[in-house]
Image 1 (tube, helix red, strand yellow):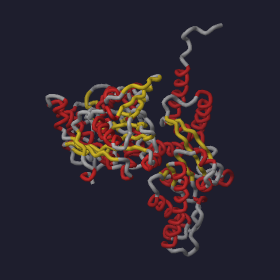
Image 2 (tube, one colour):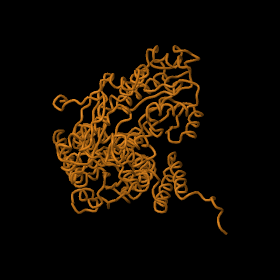
Image 3 (tube, rainbow, N blue to C red):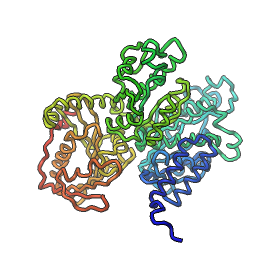
Image 4 (cartoon, helix red, strand yellow):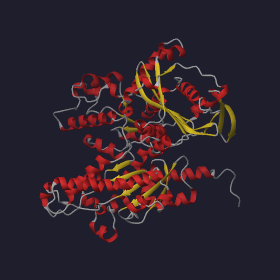
Length: 620
């Protein structure tokens, strides 16, 4: 009997539905056995149906100074939960250094973008001799770490790989007792030196997985099963494998720009105790004097620290705005002020509507948001209406809130740039600029009044971290959405055929930092643009026109005759679908929405722009 026409969904819908169900289960799964079962199911789905649509392919090598048999599938699932489609290469037990050093090793042939080296204390090549002094133990720790980083450098240079190393957990036994804390020869004392040295000596392409901190949080007795180590070289107890996998995945996500950007918080009973509209500012529990007041103040201090390293803060509260603003203006112990928030929604609209408005206002996708709200009904409303938003479950105790946000691992980053530290201020500048636009007669007058000055330079080492971040996080103004690791950015900068440019922008409201990147290759008289992207903070300012003017002026002097670029559509970059046409390029081909464009350098006329370029010698 033939199936009813239209009764079965298209194949892509069937694949999407199967993955959506599995990933939804995995996102809230806290049981290790159940997570392993879901990980096995994910492996089967990958073989039968392929990776979920839109997930970013990434090649990852997992190298163990311990057995990784029970970790591989959970790691694969944890990576899928953050939107990655991993191809995993797993090395045999305890051949980590050989795989890094040998030019024809399986890992080298695999060519990982990211290599995760799972070390244990048993991986160390030496230990202090009895009676060693602190200086001798420190020197030995430095030599061991440098040997390790020399091997990492070989793999990095050969494969352009970013490398993830973990800090070391202590041994469960303590033969010297409490004397170990002041005995340089003690093994756990030495492990502490190694962990500090690993961080101090780490090159930019090495990222730390702070396993020692995980062990401190969970307890060594919970983390490590000595019997399983002796029998199977298992580095972590089975119950905590999902936590290790999620932590590794978060680091990979941070390297590839998959972290979230904005934390949206409720106010009443989230930032302070009590409902300000009922009890007034003086009745709120916030600050010294009570345990709950101190817990709310500590949470505000935690949020302030997130903001200072680049996480955007926003408010969505069921409240009258005049009541909602009073604690920030009047309470003597509030840590956060109104200016710490880049968006402030205090009204009686559904939380999901406010989150949509915040995302639009900040030019962010909903998948950039995390909501912290004490009200379980509000949390559930947002989860159902906006599944893209992460909404952690809270306890009734505000003392738990910082650890709950930490546990989401949503804000993991591989570095903190100067632009990160200034990000909130940059978004506030946008607000001032919108106000100016509303009072200016026309767009040209508005742009001229901004007094914009750009610095346009090739890729430079001081900017590598920011370039990598921008390449991996920018979605809307991004013509090809090609992602690169930090190692690939450095390799492109050193490529004699490569062509790279960055744009830094200032205006009369402040410094926006590095906001645009263009990269490609010059061959046979043609510059082929492989990537062109720009921060959403400076859209519609004429920066793209100024950058093209500068690029054409530079390449014309070297005999380049054509510029060729492509637009590869995604679900987020329709904004720049016609950019090449608007800049004067001619359409060469259109294949299923992927368009290729060409510009004849000899015929190019500079485009109008209100951005002044600062000469290189003036930008030092």
